[in-house]
Image 1 (tube, rainbow, N blue to C red):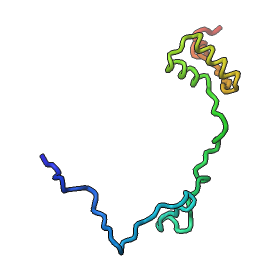
Image 2: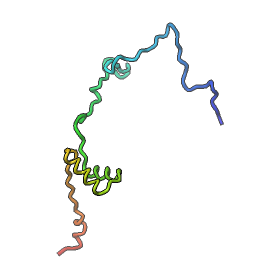
Image 3: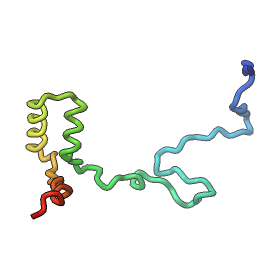
Image 4: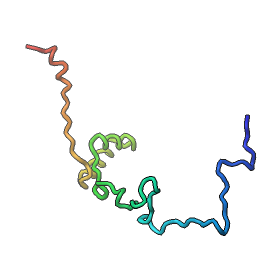
Length: 111
């Protein structure tokens, strides 16, 4: 078993003195410059990280609504109210799913 003593540390010591400058943080995110390895000319701005749909609502699909209802433990009436309210606010997208379960059994019912 090996224990670290109080004096040992994983982080090295930081030398301070009159001849060692203290780095200052940038005034804004626009002035952050990448390291020399990446590019000394390129700067990082907030526009580089914007998403396509920043301000557009992300609509719920029926499957997502079902998951939400299940996760919240809503009753059938509560689920219907939630679905109705989301639909009235245009926050529920209509998805049509066609099931063709019968196609695998039609082989057994030929003419």
